[in-house]
Length: 392
Image 1 (tube, rainbow, N blue to C red):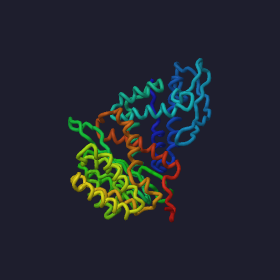
Image 2: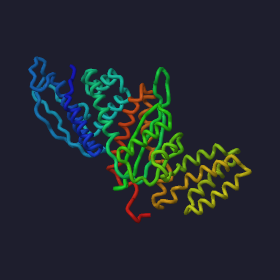
Image 3: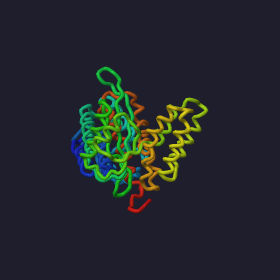
Image 4: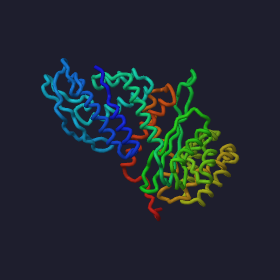
């Protein structure tokens, strides 16, 4: 039997996210679960509500509320009840308890990965719920999801004190070839609450500087303001795009990446640990004056031992010292891009299943789904940085 999903459910999901963004993500999950359970009951009874059918195996008997604990929040769903049936009914999508969220997310993740394959999505839903859905329904659901994700990616922004930027790459088929597409991610620390939030994500095959510039302009167009420091690695095209969009805004180059980059210029293996230790001493200095003094000694020390390292350090290491101009209590979190690096690791855990995406849209769909969920968790968790005036 083919279940015909009600378009009003998809519209209701769209309205929730478009109006409230991630603040009502739990409400959207409730709507989705309720719709799935109603559809499963109809399949179990072999009849739609109020439908006369000789194949009917029982009758609908209202709903029973049940509260489920999820990572987003507690949600209360309406479990459909059945009477006059020879076999008991319980929605398989709930799996009799708290495992429901994992089952649902696993199925949806597979759907995102196979974004252009309605046949595969249909098979997954049939395996999870024991029912079938039409390819037309799957295609319509994919379009609705894309609308939801687009509304989230273009939602209005506000004031964010700190802005973290990073990029990673995914394999995408394009014109008969497999090409690396850049996945750009922006994370902000809100001025109002000091919490982390994923501000935007973008996937593109375009040239690096063009992609970065378009991405940053999009953030500003959506209302991003109040940024006092940008933290990132020296990605190709990022610095030029940053200067073009944000002007002379302070920039902190990731100290972890600087440590790794330095090793490329160390001529002998036995010098590597000493070089790493000397750079750590610069980064861990109590103030900028001391950091500059240690940097001068570093450059002088390696002028003869490792001239390429010395030349590189003279221009590169100062880019990792901007953090000294900011409150001491903030520096530990601002000196690296660790916050967005961990986010990228979560993205990779999902995307490595796909390996090669059929197009940019499929990749963007999965990445958006992952970062939306993580951003929601961040917004409901504790403060990331105390931004109260006078804190240092």
